[in-house]
Image (cartoon, rainbow, N blue to C red):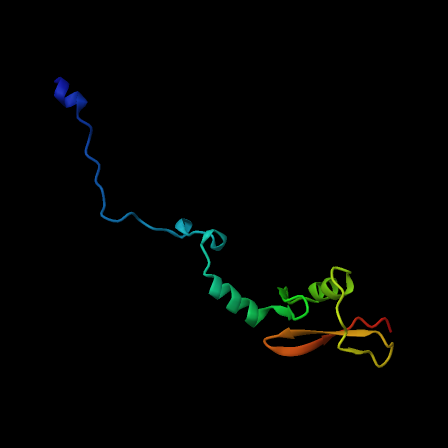
Length: 104
């Protein structure tokens, strides 16, 4: 073999586009989000407290933590007929809802 033949590397066939598989996907948390889409999603799916001016997760646990814990003092929108405890308001999809954790 001559030196030229030793130095030459075998040609590798290259395709115009690389093959794509399901493993090439990017996890959604690494994709830049449009702030307007985030706000729209929160308005449609999350609970909103007008007094705090914030959205929070639409779960019972989030309601309990938001209103029962002393993060911020909320003004009640009424009182419970049975125990006379405070009833607090929040919104879901623009509709007013009431929260009260009645001990009775």
